[in-house]
Amino acid sequence: MAKLYLVPTPIGNLDDITLRAVEVLKSVDVILAEDTRTTSFLLRHLGIEKPLKSHHKFNEHATAQFFTEMVAAGRDVALVSDAGTPGISDPGFLLVRTCVEQGIEVETLPGATALIPALVNSGFPCDRFCFEGFLPQKKGRMKHLERCIDEERTMIFYESPYRVVKCLEQFAECFGEDRMISVSRELTKKFEETVRGTIGEVLAHFCEHEPKGEFVLVVAGKPVKKKKTEAIDDDQD
Image (tube, rainbow, N blue to C red; front, side):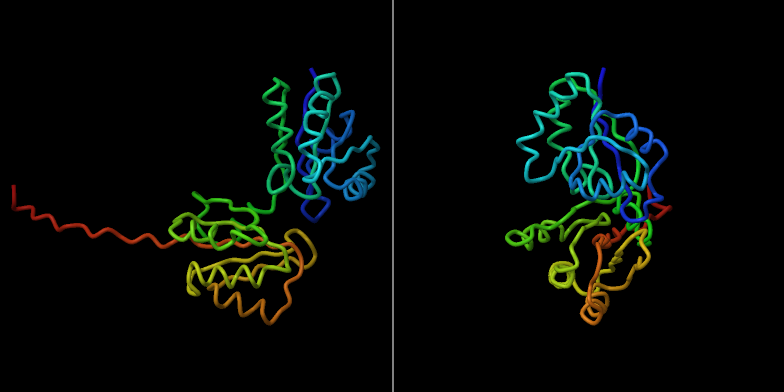
């Protein structure tokens, strides 16, 4: 039976694609792309020629059923985003859900995603964390952050360079200027950089240095208060 494959693509450095991802892209009948121009560039780099179809956030509601029926009809289909793993702050969820609901097999390959390198590189606890993705661009940003105030796990956010300073200002308001943060930009690329410190310190840095590139902001969770333990008198029963 045909399958829907979710294929992660490099977030910057084209050498980060896996051998298995290359083999799948070579073998499928059709590749669904968030931006066909971006995917065409990658496929040329890999020496792959395949039919490309657009599947992005503006048409995914209209095309999910169509591409599900394509797989059901016996054609192997691969879904890729512009960078990273489809479905992680990118189109993919609706198509996967539609396939699952209709008994179509879905296979997701492991591979590149920006949040994990940024998390591990932060120096904050990685055993428990929450991924918040992009905050709402306009309405609802502060309400969303207010729901995170008491979060004790490490928190990961994505942000565009145009809103990084505003985002850090809102972090300072919600979490306090002394909360620790690690901000990574341009991961895997030539100008990769990670800035660590308090929110106040990192905000001052990006007020002085214009934010450029793709950003991942990793915020330390709310410090856990140690519980007071009562002294035990060994002489008492």
